[in-house]
Image (cartoon, rainbow, N blue to C red; front, side, top):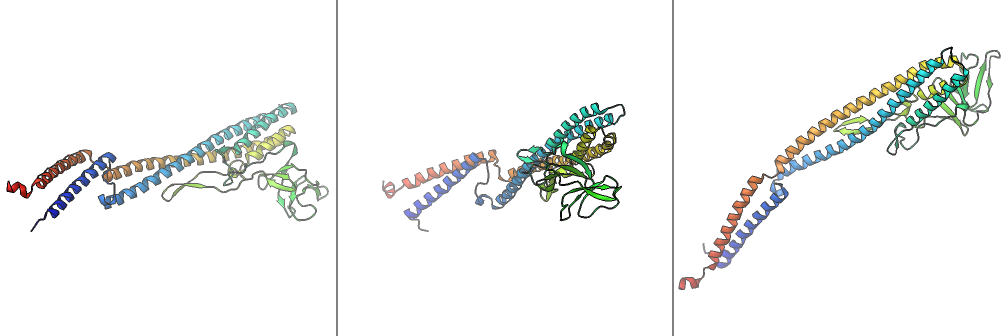
Length: 369
């Protein structure tokens, strides 16, 4: 094969360029600490690395969701613990004031403390986490509970209905929801007359407890409104692939549950104390116990979710370590091996330069001499 000077110089330049490229690549790998910097370095390895990176990103997002949810739930736990303490104190007051040795004066004094307990309960029910109301269901920007004036509280009504309730006892009340002149009026049954008497148009701010719902209603601007302004919807966060955890509990499940309405109970206890109504005070003791049970059940529910989040976070942390290790085994550089390769490549490069200088220095004149 005839080798022209042009071909010779082209080959020398090509060899030097390849050696320089190898040196450059090794230097970049050592600087970055990564074996793979471009897809051509290891196509299959890079594909695995990209999968691992996607997994790590998802673990990071799951971890953030868990941390936020735990913060929310820990705040909820504190609120419920305080609510449980409030109801315990209310129970002590009710038991003490139901005693025949108490009188109107001591009960009026106790009513002031119950009023404070009710204010604290309302504050708990309207608690926020960040800028969101915690107990309004999914309506996190709406204050869940409306306060009522104890002086306008009318006690129990049997039901809200468009039909007169059957089997009424003397003094029973109900709210007429039928269209007509008595719409939204409170009616009271008179056994002597065997008839329902209209008590007139409720004054704005009038509140009652509807017994068949065990819920407090407030008359406002011509309408009866549930004092609970939230909804009954829960929301969840994703904490893993196909795994979610419930984060919120609506206030209707805690503070105004039909099985034990803490807000209504304190209202009725305060009114009974102010009225020196021993029977009403005694009846409130069972209502307080029911409300405390509801709060305790929800505390247990919160604890169960927190435990689930803790367990999931532990699994995510372990998975993050394992995935990072697997990704590192593929893309991280073996420095000892890389330094050795760099030294070898430097030797090859220097030898190539030396060889090139020797070859290119030869000419026809050297042989003529």
